[in-house]
Image (cartoon, rainbow, N blue to C red; front, side, top):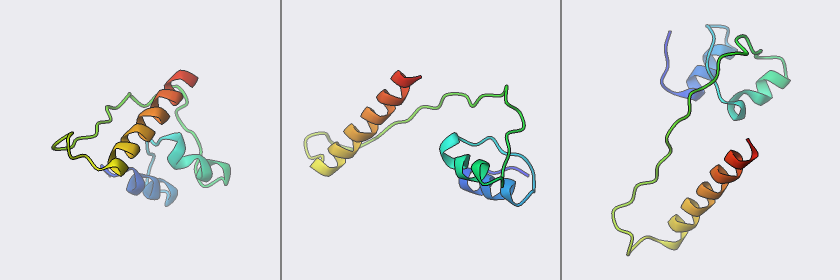
Amino acid sequence: MTATDIVIAREMAVAGIGIAMLTHAVCAGDVKEGRLEQTLPLVTIPPVTISATFLERRHLPRRVRAFIDLIAEAIHEKSAAG
């Protein structure tokens, strides 16, 4: 089976339907609780592009700008930490 939604892929793996390529954030609790286990430790998830798109910069609500800044900072910190 295949899934394009990471949450569905996680649920399928927990149900024993197959294996899934999941981010640590999505599966850490399941691994800790023994519901999932790492099977291919040498396989890595390829990097993905994250983008935020908005129509006009002039009328961008402050809360949207704050969200974009928060996400950018989190990504930068995660990248710097390795």
